[in-house]
Every structure is written in C-alpha cells, then in structure tokens.
Length: 252
Ligand SMILES: [Zn+2]
Image 1 (cartoon, rainbow, N blue to C red):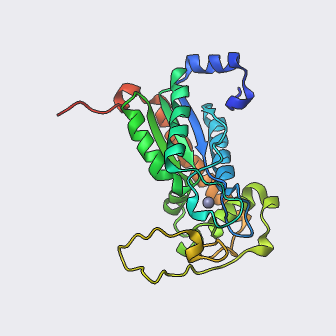
Image 2: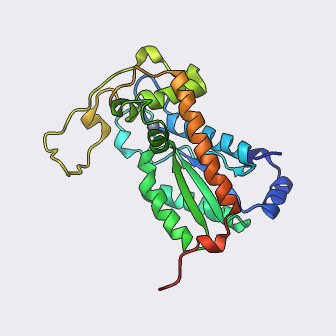
C-alpha cells in the first residue's frame, strides 16, 4: 500500500481519505549546519522520520516543507529564511487542505527548533477549528530516550548528535573531515535569565554550536531507531483516538 501522497493518484488518495482521518506532515528548514553538514539537514531528517513512520503505521505522509524560520542563520550562505507569520499560514493552510478531505488528526514532524513557536500557535488555532495537530521533535525525544548517548555539548545545533543522524541517513552528504568543535561565544550583555535577539554568527564563526567531531553513523542509527519507535507509538494511539475526545473542552 502506498503511503506517500506524492506517489498516489487522486483516485488512490480518495480511497485513503475515505477510510482514514490521520496524516503526517514533515517540516524543516534549509539552513547552515556548519561546514561539514548539508543545508538540508533539518528537512531531510524530518522527511525520513515521517516517511519511515508512515510505512510502519500505514498513515499518509505528505512531502516535506523544506523552508522554515531561519532568519538567525542568514549570515551563513544558502540559508533560506521565511517569516514566522508566512510559515505558520503556509503550514496551517496545508493542514486545512487535508481537513477538506476529512483528515482531522495531523502529526507534524518538525526538524527545526526555530519553527516550534509558529507550529504551536497554529496547532492551538486549528484545535478550535476541528483539527487536532500534534508536533513531534526528534532531539528532545532522543535526549530523554538515550540520555547517555551524547553530552550536552554534542546535542546542540549542528553538533555530534545531528551530524551522527546525517551520517546514518546520507553519509555522502557529510564532509566529516570539515567537522568543527566550537564553544559558542557568550555575548557581553548576556546575564542569567536574559533573552537577546542574537543571530548564530554573534556566537559562532563556523555555524557549529558545541562539539561535532565525535559524530558516528552507529550512534545516529541508535537515535533514529529510538525516535521512530516513539513516534510510531504516538501515531498508533492517534489512529484509535476519537476526534470528539480531542477537541477543546466546554466551559466548566
Ligand atoms: Zn538542525
């Protein structure tokens, strides 16, 4: 059975939508991940997690949204940056198109942390319109499921964990000889509890935050297996859930 929307004909899509009310939408970014990793890191990982989960659960998977909220990486060449507002509306309308065909439960597999505030907002808005949207991010899942596999310095942007997942998925796209370990610079105005409107380039010259050179495909495979299993669990539960039970509660 096909699970990728882009491979189905409209007649096959009609059959799916007649029987099913769940779909998976991967979203990511095209942004710098240091000199060693491809710009597509976040959307390539999200797309693969989503497709693999779709195959294991029989749930429809959409093509990945490749651009996200990446303004803070723009000084590094090739980063494509979309405003939070435009990104939120684009993803929301994608979800509403699915709803037009009867989908009311959507799992967004997000590969880029900068997208999360926009996704959380749209999920809350859509819940009020009859669509339940859950958002999965693989790296907080991995930190909980495999706490000892990487140090905090290896778990940052473009660090060894993300690079390991790239090595496991598409090693040809990683130039591991160009791996960088860089301790981010602390801004002169930084004190505890302060949020500053910084770009990546204010803190790192290479684009890497923390330790990258210790990446390995073997560790990447462990991360992938752990987070896909976790995501599969959620999708299986969501398939069984009644949409009426997922809608906002009435006033107390
Ligand atoms: Zn990333």
